[in-house]
Amino acid sequence: MVKKLLALAALAAALVPVSASAGPAADCSRTSVGLTPLTDLGARKYKGFQGGLYPGGKNVPPAGYLAQGVAAAAQVEPIDGRVVLLSIGFSNATYEFSVFKQIADADPRKSPELTIVDGAIPRQSTDVIRDPRARYWRALLGRLLAAGVRPDQVQVIWMKTAIAGPTDPFPAYARRLRGYIAEVYAILRRRFPNLKLLYLASRTYAGYSTISLNPEPYAYQGGFAVKWFVEDRIRGKVTGPWVGWGPYLWTDGTKGRSDGLVWTCADVIQDGVHPTASGRQKVAELLLRFFTSDPTATPWFVRP
Image 1 (spheres, one colour):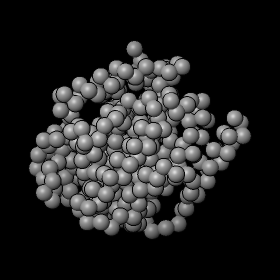
Image 2 (cartoon, helix red, strand yellow):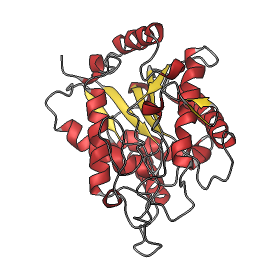
Image 3 (cartoon, helix red, strand yellow):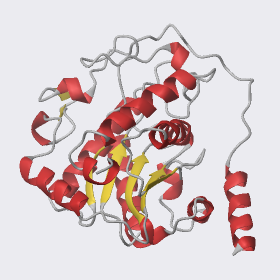
Image 4 (cartoon, helix red, strand yellow):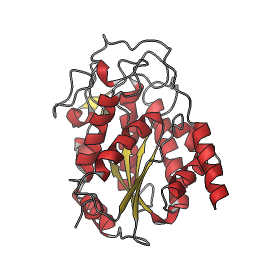
């Protein structure tokens, strides 16, 4: 077992690129791209497609579907004393979720039976991990074993989604990403047999980006991929664990959105894409607020 752990830890380390300080500077002049956050778009449309996080331009699930999520949350029970909340995703996801784990683990509201594991790894975007043979999945197992938990104890997952270097026009990009999310969903069902709840997230604002990794409007349009996959689950086009939005992360730069969230150039590093300490903290606080207040999360996240 020790040798296996060391091998998987080495694989996880190999998948993490060395940070580089050189590169193009962020374009701090792009403080807005003039797009309306899905949460503010509501029943209005972007390029012919309705906004809102859920059907009908709403930002909350339909009552019946929400009841299913609450019922799924009630089924989350410790397995050998543990409930595991796991993150899935790429660089931004691990930078943000690792800070969330720190503040959540220190929060007295968190259930003592909950173990939070950051399984996100740089460069492991949705188009990469949709392959069940991807090295990511072995590295992820190493993260779990290093945390002293097993795949069968994972009952809740938060996953951030994106495709690296997209060039597709809208809605082709969002539709392709939705398809990749479905492929990853199938992998998650096989690898985590006790998975009850999957929360999805799209990207933060990328208007300051000066690289082709996932600039605007793709960071914004990725929200539609999540929205459409959640709707597929609501309508029974896909079956399995309950699927819903985690906190919606995109906002229009310093123009912001109706709840006051803004994303400044100080929230990103030199490439304009990856979050600085302030950006990581913003997302971490959104995650903590969500898991300590959402009715599908409080039954298993919050201390009884």
